[in-house]
Length: 183
Image 1: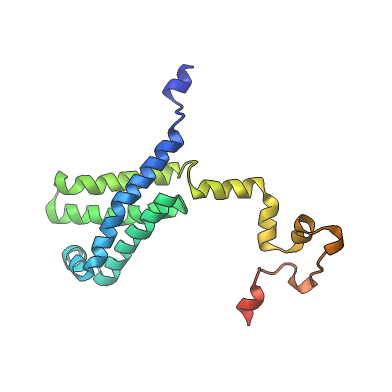
Image 2 (image 1 turned 30 degrees about the vertical axis):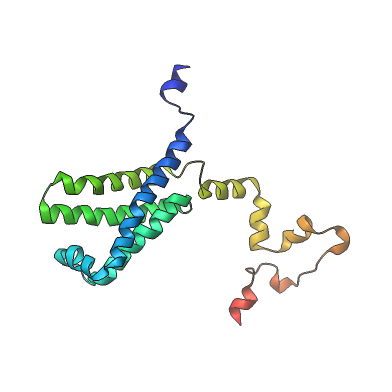
C-alpha cells in the first residue's frame, strides 16, 4: 500500500505527456524567432563563439528547436527530438556563460529547457505518445512487420485460399516498391 502511494503514480504517463507538450510548445517559438531574422541571430549568438559557418549553424539551431519541439509534442521520435534540443541548449548555455558569466537570469530558462529535454531523453515519452503506439503494434503484431518488409505473409493474412497470388521468386524478399527505386 505505502509502496504504491510513495513510489508508483497512476499519473506518471500523464506527467510525461504534460512535460513533453509544454516543453515543445514553449520552445517552438524560439526556433521561429531565429528563422525570422537568421542573420541577426548569427551575429548575436554564433559569431561571438567563433564557430564556423554561423548562418548554417543558426539554421540548424532553429531547425532543431522547431522539429525537436514537434517531435516532443507528438511523441514521435521523442528521444531523437530531445537529443536535438539538448544539443542546442548546451551550446546556448555555453554561450550565456562565456559572454555573461553565471548570470541566473540568462541561464534559468536555458537550464529548464535542457533539464526537461534531458529528463524526456532518459525517461522516454510515456504511454501517451506515437512512439508507444508504434512499439505496441510491432510487439503485438509481428506478422505486420513481415507484411511490411516481405510479401510472403500477404497471401496467408489477407487472401482466401482460392485467391492466392503467386509472387515470382526474385521478388519475394525485396523491399516494397523496389522496382520503382531501381528504374
